[in-house]
Length: 148
Image (cartoon, rainbow, N blue to C red):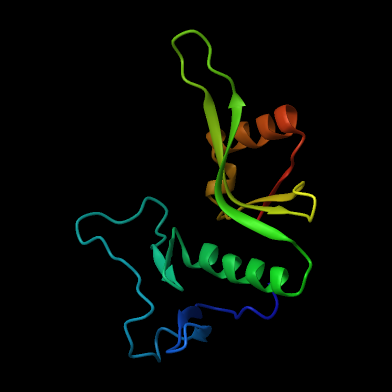
């Protein structure tokens, strides 16, 4: 993710609507917002963050969105989408289908999927439910999930 910033630097929009990197500790404005739930913290200690008006589940996910924006601007990818659902097990009888929701999916000019990305911490990438869905994605769709 070179060129996107490192550490806990986030992005805000300047007065002209352009995205700019900011260091939240040295920035007094309210454009960069992290939400804190006073009653109960997140299960994995991540905080939702707002980047250029969009809410992400973590700082890492927001930074990866910026990286994909730079890849798109450089012409390496044609487009990308957030929170893309994939059916991994079809509905059966009264049971609903099982779905995996990818954090990001990148596409080429023809609309073919290049990569499926999931922003994971060391803890969440070993959870049994995620591991099963990762394997089902490979088996059902032939897509290997790239963990960021």
